[in-house]
Each structure stands twice: as C-alpha cells, then as structure tokens.
Image (cartoon, rainbow, N blue to C red; front, side):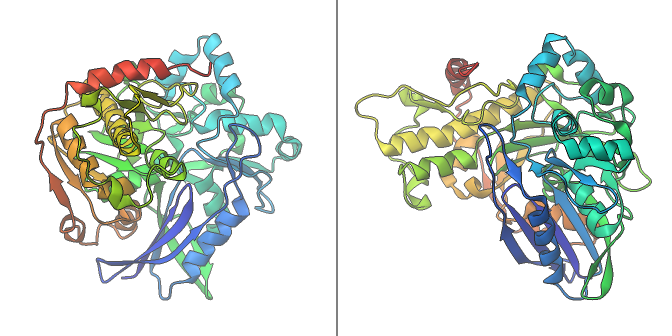
Length: 473
C-alpha cells in the first residue's frame, strides 16, 4: 500500500510517502510565499498552494490513496463555476478583522458564540475573515448574487478544485466559529451574526470517507482523509483516549487533549472546544485546544537579531535557569493566545541588568515558551484530568534544555518524538485506515523525567505576563 499524506502548512507543503505499511519518506517539500500587504495582514497565494499540492502528488507513482491536512482557520473565496480563487488565502495569523471583533464584543455576543461554536470571539477563526471578504471584495458580492460564490477554509478549495467535491471535514469546520459544536452543522444564527451567507459554505462531512479523486499521471487517485493539521498531529502522537495530550511546538505551540464523545464548554479556562476527528459512520471525537502564538517563531526572531548562530549554542547553559535569576521573557510577539486571547499584548523582557548576556536572553526565551505552554496545560487540568505523560513534537523539541525544563515545570514525563512529520504521519494513518505501524513512531522517542520541581516559577512568569497584556490597545 502506497499512501501520500500532504501536510499543507503555514510555511510549506510537504508530501509524506508511506510504503509497506510503515516506511516513510518526504517525497517533496515546497515552501510558499508569505505576503504582508498591510500591518496585521497575512496572505498566501491560493494558486501557489494548489500548484504545490499537485506537484507533491505528481512526485509519486502507483499511489493507492491521498490524505490532506490543512492550516485550519485560513480561508478564501472562489468562483464555484470556474473554481478559480477570487481572493488570496487569508491566513490564520491575520488580524485585519480585530475592529469587527471589538464591535461584536461591545454588543455582548461573546457568550452566544461560545455557547454555539465552543470558541471565543477572536479574529483567529475564519468567520470574520469570510465576512470581510463578502463585504470588501466586489467580485464576491457579484458571484453571491449569481449563486456562484464559494466560501471556505483552504481544504474546501483544494478538494473542490482538485477532487471535485465542495466539502469540508468536521474538524476543520469546528475552527470557523460558524459550526454548531453540538450538531456538527452550520449554524444559521452564527452565520447571520457574522454576516456569512450560509448557502456559500461547503457541506460538512466526516474526517474519513470519499473526498473525490485527484488526477495525476493519467490516473484518478482517491482522497480518503481530510483534517486540520493540529488534529492530525494529535492522531499522529497516538492520542486516542480522554486525557491523552500532545503539544506541537512549531511556529506557535498547540496543545490538544482528547475529551471523548461529548463536546465540553470551557470558556472560563480560555480553551477551545473542537472536534478532533470523525470516522465515517461514527460519532465525532472531541478535544480541547489551547494555542500559543509564538514558539519557534520567537526562536527564529532571536536568531535574526544575532542572539545565537547555531542551535547547538542554545542546548545547554552554565547558569541556573533565567527565571531563578529573575529574568523572564513573555513571547507575546503576535499577542497572547490561550488562556488570555489578547492580540494587543506585546512581547516583554523583564529583569534585564547590565550583566545580562546573549545566552541569558536565549535561556529566557526558551523558558518563556515553556511557561506559556504550561499555562495552557494548567488551564486544561482545571477541566479534565491529563495523564502523567505528554507527547511533544516540533523543531524546538530537539533542544534538551527545553525538554527537560518543560518536564520540570509540568512535573510530568515528556515524550519528545523524533519523527519530524507527526502531522503528516497522523494524516497517513487516517488515510490508510490505521494500517501503518505505530511502533515506528514510538521507537524514535526520547523521554524526560522531572528532575527539579519548577512549578512554583509559573506564578512569577504570570506576573511578567500581566505587564504585556493590552500593551498595544
């Protein structure tokens, strides 16, 4: 069985080829352009993404099935007749609709959105982005009047254009603020509230099933799975039961914990109630999600400033932890996600002195990312019992100091997965109906046991966070 899992992420499109029920290799990896037309705006070229997906598929021979995971909240509009995009992809990081969010909050609509969608009222999700398109793109209004407008997250565009099915899976739909978390269908009240025409949205379907067929090298290849990237990673980590949790440290840090077959509202903790996945013909499995906007991006930013040159320079430090020396960094470089949801927060260093060196700053950055992830896990722990073992992945998890500090702050065993493509691996397992050996993933993992109890420093870090909140408001 040859399976291709396409991980269409924020910075690149990667194709993971799985052969012989477990042997994997990246068959293609293509970066795409990032556009910042105005302050706070982030866009991708929809045609470039389509081209990169097709190139990944065309790099393979004799495929039996394809699975695709997507960016989640990134969305666009296209012509339902020609299947051509009429807007760029508005990326999940985009904050152009923050004034709309403030207006809705002033009308006290937060509770209604939280009750129906299970999500806080923030610009992170797709609803206000799609409404912005309807209001500001003349071609969208024209196509809407003709009944030819199609709106959706990027997955729906990929599937409509390449596979001939105008659908979105339930895990992706749960990230829009337009789906009723209880019914798993588009909610008319939410669509009316945000100003998104419900008739222009795709059909919501399960995560596995028939998503159409994509032409490559004269063959039509079935697409059998479609899912949000972080939920794909959750599945790739082997999380299946309530209390199983993972954290992916990529551009941002995303923690998810499986909660079972019933959605849970958790507005007090600032967590997101989301669909993890749904197998065809079965009930959905739900999860709680907490995101940190800046993780790997903070480290890349520090490198661009010249704080370090090679990654081996920041794997160990001679001094005690930065937080013990009253030096803290709050990685709010794009605002604060869970549990604060404050896009006006600013990044903060506090505790600087004349003897602070570059290595001290880097130590505090690594610790700051850990503390932000720990805040998310603490919020989840108020709601559900998280197991003593947490699985992690992402580029920064190759750093032993980071992993050990995370184990100490969480006071839990940390399983650092060395398989770099867990998101695509999860997509592949869903695509193949689980006929892929999970031992391949487990055999490459590194374990970190708590050595020093650092839980008390989380309160000191929270004090630093209070200095960053609403800085740009």
